[in-house]
Image (cartoon, rainbow, N blue to C red; front, side, top):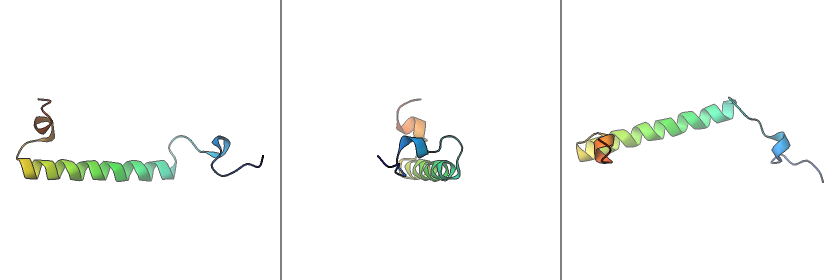
Length: 52
């Protein structure tokens, strides 16, 4: 069987540029959602989720 680019042997693990870009984008989305929740509900995220 030929090695494909999706095989487990060819995947990179750790702090790769692709992983860091994805983490940054997800962090930006989370921050934006937190701001939107706070603006619409008048409560912080933890209060909105009844964690505090």
